[in-house]
Length: 304
Length: 304
Image 1 (cartoon, rainbow over the protein chains, first blue to last red):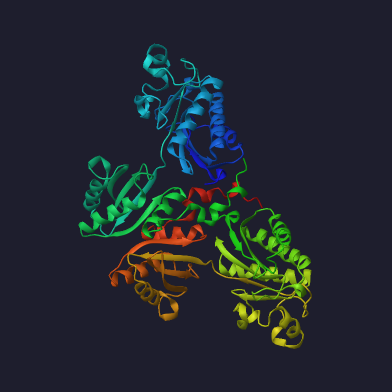
Image 2: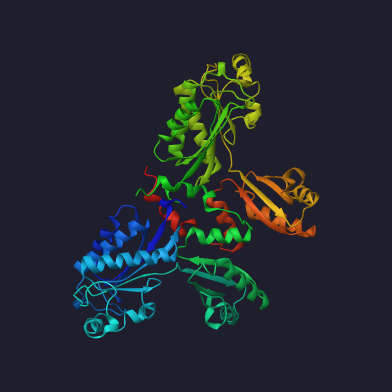
C-alpha cells in the first residue's frame, strides 16, 4: 500500500447543535487542513450537539482534529451548555477509524498523539477510550463520561481514578475531551422473502454475538415496508467480515423456509469491505489491492 | 458519479522498442499532462515496439495521447523502422478504455475527437477502429493495418477504400495511426481441484463464446504447476460480468466431479468489476458507488 493512499476517518462530536455559525467555524477550521475531505455533518438541536465526519491521510486528520478541538474550546462555553446527550466537553468525543492501509492500532497511536498535543498545548484534560484506552476501565465511553461535564469538574480534583491521561487535572469552560479509536462500523440490513417479523427476530437471535452468534454482530428483527428485515451493526468487519455475516443470515433464513430477498448497506463503507467479499466469493486467493487501477492513482492525489 | 472521478485508460503502442531515450521522450511528453498516471510501460526489441498504459480524466487522457502521437511523429521515421509486429505508423494504435464513470460510447467519442485533432493539426492520417469505427469494415484492427506502413503508403493514394477517416490522404515518415475504443479486458484464471487437463479443456469449451458458451468469453484449458486451469479473457465485463463467468465455471466443474480450488485475476482490473461481484453475491440491489468512502475523495484529487 502506498503511503499516500492511507486513509483514516475521524468523527468528532461537538457540544453545539443550535448556533449554525459556531458549527461552521469549527468545520471550517478542520476543512482548512490540506488533504481533508468533510463527508458529512449533522447537528441536533435537542442534543445541542453536532457530529462531523471527515477523512484524509492520518497526519492531516490528526492536524484537523486538533484544530477542531482548539476552535470548539474557543467558541463553546460548557458552563452555558445544555442538551439531552451526555457530554464532558466542547469537543466531546474524537474517535479515529481505520479506512484503508491502516490498522486499529495505528489509529490508537494517532489518538494518543492527539491526546498529548491537546493536553500539553491546549491545556484541556484528555481521556483515551476504546481501542486507544491506556486503562482498561476507560475502554467504555459511558465510564469516561460518568457525571458529565458538571460531575467531572468536581471529581477530577478529588478522585484519583478520574485523573486525565494527558493535560491538567482541572476543568475549564472547554471541559474535557475523550479521544479514541474504534473499528469501522457497517450498518447492514437483510430483507427476507416474508412479512413474518418473528422469522427476522429468530434469525437475529441466531447471528448476533449477545445470544451465541457471530462476534462483532449486533442484530434485531423488524418489519420494514411490510417486509421482514434483519437489521445489523457489524462493529468489526476486519474480524467478522460482511460475507460471513451474510452467509450466516442466508443459512438461517433457508433453515426457516424463507430466502434472502435483498440486502443493503446503510451509509458509507470502505472499499476494502466489499473487495474482501468479492475476493471470498470468487476465491481470488492471491488478489492484491494493488491490482485495482484506481488504487494506483495514489500519487496523483492527496499531496503530503 | 462526480465529474472528477471519471477515469479512462489509454494504451498507445509506439513503433520504437530499441532506443530507450526515444521511448523516454514520448512517455515524458504524455506524463507531463496534469492528472495523468503512467501505470506501465513495456518495450519489445524484437517487435521494435513499446506499449504504454496510462489513466486519467478523459480530457487529460485525450491531451496526453495527442502529445504522445506528436512526439512519436517527430522522433520516429517509419522509413527506417523494422520489427516483427504489424504497424502502420510511429504512433501505431491508440485505444481508449472505459475504467470508471464512462461508457464505451464515451471512449468512442473521445477517439473521434482525438482523430480529428491529429488529422487536422498534425497532418497524420487517422483510422478509427473497434468501437470507434465509423465504417463497419474498420472495426477489426488487422483490416485497418493491412499492408502495414509500406503497403498503406501506396494504397492510400490509389484505393478509395483506404482513405483515412481524418487527415490527409498521404503518408509521411510518421505513417498513419489507428485510434479506437474497446472495453476493459480482464484476464481471469480458475484453478481446479484436479491435475487432469482434459477437464479444464472441457470446461473451457462449455463456457467460451466460440463453442456456444457465454458472450465475450475466450477460454482455454491448460496445466499450470501440475494443476488444471481454465484460462480466460473476458472481453466485456460490462455485458458478461466476472461473477457470471465464475459461476458458470464452477457449475461445469461440479458437473465434472471436481471443484474450484482458487482463481486469479492477472494484471490490473477496475474497482467496478469486483464491486459488481460483491453486489451480486451479497444481493446489495440498491448499493451505490457513492457509498464507498474512497469514491467521495474525488474533489481532493485530480484537479481539473
